[in-house]
Image 1 (tube, rainbow, N blue to C red):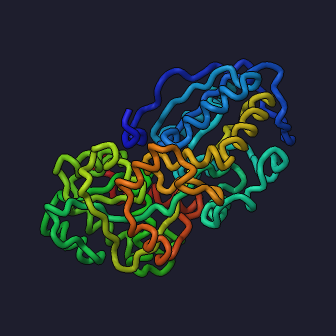
Image 2: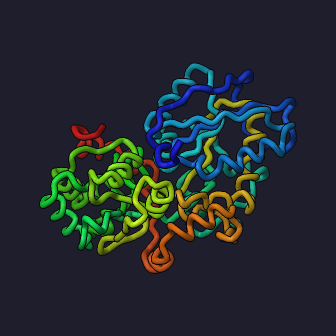
Image 3: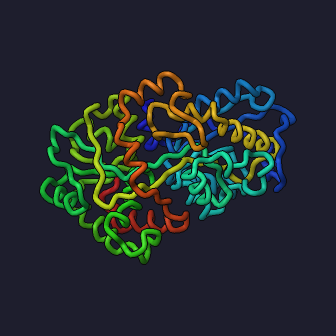
Length: 395
C-alpha cells in the first residue's frame, strides 16, 4: 500500500478481541511482564505506521513475554472517535492504541475518550521535557496529558506545483486567489478534518492574512473565513484525504495543491508526483507545526496498560526514532533530540538525499514556528469549515 493513501483508507478488519475489558486502575504501571503475553490492536489515523511500524514490530520481536501479536489497522480520523465511543459505551473496547495527528486527538479530548497518561504514568515513561526537541515539547502540551508525541515536523503550509504548467507561482494570498479565478478547478486542497496539509493551510492563513487572532477561529478569523469562501468558488471539490490531491497533481488534473514538507517529499519518492514538482510559500508565511501522538482509549486491562507504556518508551529511544525519517513522509520525523539523518536506515538516507530540498533548512530557520490550535478550538474550526466551506463540495 502506498503511504500517501493511508489517510483515506477505511477502517480495516482484524481487530483483536480483548479478554479483559475492565478499566485499568489509575495507578502507575511498571515495565514488568504481564501475567501472559498480550495481543495489541493499534489503529492509525495519521499515516504514522509508515514511520513507526518497523520499530513496533521490532518491539514485539524483542519482548515475546510482553506481546504475542500486534494487529495494525487504519482509519479516517473523523470516523474513529465515534467508533471508540460506541465501544466504550458497550464495554467492549477492542482498540488498544491510536496513532493520531491533532485531529482525532482533539476530538478524543473533546469526547473524553483517552486515558490520562501524564502525569499519572511519569514513572513508566521517559522524562519527555528532557528528550524532546523544543517544537515537539511545545506540541506535547496540546495533548493535555492524554497522548505522547512519537513523531514531529514543522509541516507547512506550502504550495506544491508543476513548474512546466506554472511558470510564476503565487507568492501572496491575493495572487493565489487570482489564480483560482483565472484558472477554475486547477487548485485543490483536502478536507482539514482528515488532512494534515488541509488543516495546516486552514490554520496558517490567519498569519498570512493578518487576522486579528490566529488562535481564535470563532472571533479572530474574519479574513480567513471570507478568504476560504472566496477561494472555494474556484475549487471543484474537496477530497476527504490528502492522497487524492497528490494523485491529481501527478496526473495533471490540478496545477497547484496545498502541501507540507513530508507530503512534498514522500509522494515524489513513490513516483505519485513527478520529481520535478516544486514548492513555494506565501508572503507572511509561518510554519504551523504538527506531530503524531500515541493515545490509549479508556477501558483497557492493567496488563495492556503496562505493555503499552513500555512500548511508548521503546519508540522514543534514539535508535527507533531514527527509523521515522522513513522516505520523508513526515520530514524530518524524529521528536527527540540528537537523532540525525546519518542514524537513519540507508534507504531513508538515500531517498532524502535525492528528493529532499536544501531550501527547507533555511526556511525552517527563518520562518516563525506556531503551534496548531488548542484542541477545543480545532474542533470548532473543523466544524465551521465543514458547515460553511466544504458542505456541498466534499467527497
